[in-house]
Structure formats: structure tokens, C-alpha cells
Length: 63
Image 1 (cartoon, rainbow, N blue to C red):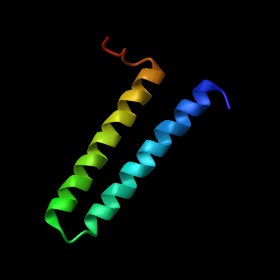
Image 2: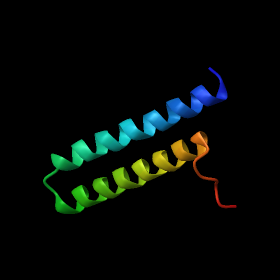
Image 3: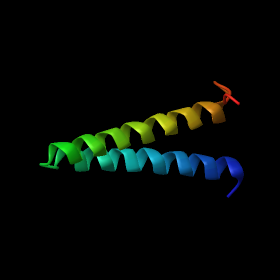
């Protein structure tokens, strides 16, 4: 797999994990654990969107 394919796969894995965390959060009875899982899902989703945009040339990383 080339670098672009690996990046796509990593981005998809992050999105899948974020969805899995959201689903787990929905079924968690503990409010603190639910909040933690939802926040982790939001961070992963945001990170995957940023990486996707950088790969697409829509934004440039801030260095």
C-alpha cells in the first residue's frame, strides 16, 4: 500500500473508532464514563477531519 492509501486507511480507522466510542457512550449508564467516551470520540473525529483536509490540500498544518 502506498503512503496515500495508508493515510486513508488510518483516517478511516480513526473515524470507525470514533463511531464505536459514540455507540459505546450511548449504552453506558455511568454519566462520567459517557462524557469521557463522547469527548474521546469528538477528538478522534476532529483529528480525522484535520488529517483528511491536509491530505486533500484544503488546509496546511500550522508549524
